[in-house]
Length: 214
Image (cartoon, rainbow, N blue to C red; front, top):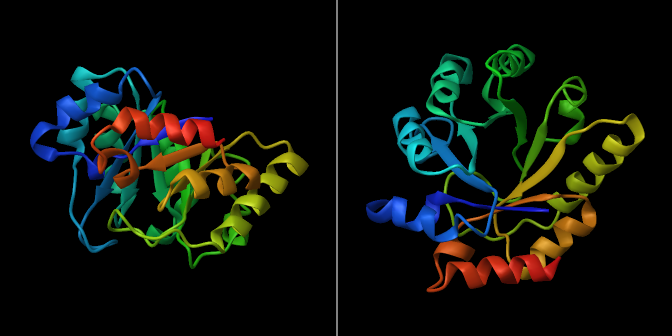
């Protein structure tokens, strides 16, 4: 079980402080990369990942919500991204991009938007290290969890067991004490939480609540 705080909800003016605050409580840090095209928001680039990499040893879980991800894999890998996840909806050459990520010596993940079915991933599931199920529509933090996405998590867990696959199942969006338990019961083992953690006066207490819930 891995809790991955999303710095999308951290204080950008005190980003190092907010990361250091949770550093001893978690293993992953979720970095939401948005380009203003694939999703209607703009956030971080590879330079920000490189800056974060200098002051933390946390696993940098880089969620690339961008068009043409193949153009940026090398930059994010070089910047210190440990896991690069790309949306299946972002490119028609998804297998090529996943192999490109692996060739850089980092873990490769695939992401599903709420409107995309698990069957779209059938050809790449044997090769990925992580599958991220978006439990909200990507682009902004603080959204409400979409209950029907639980079916996708359960389906991915069954496929993993039936075929001997080894991917982690990650969820992102609307994670709180209630929804994390639902996602865990369905088969997820990596949980991204942004506003739930950083929107509270005591982020560490929020992390402990999530851990206790599962």
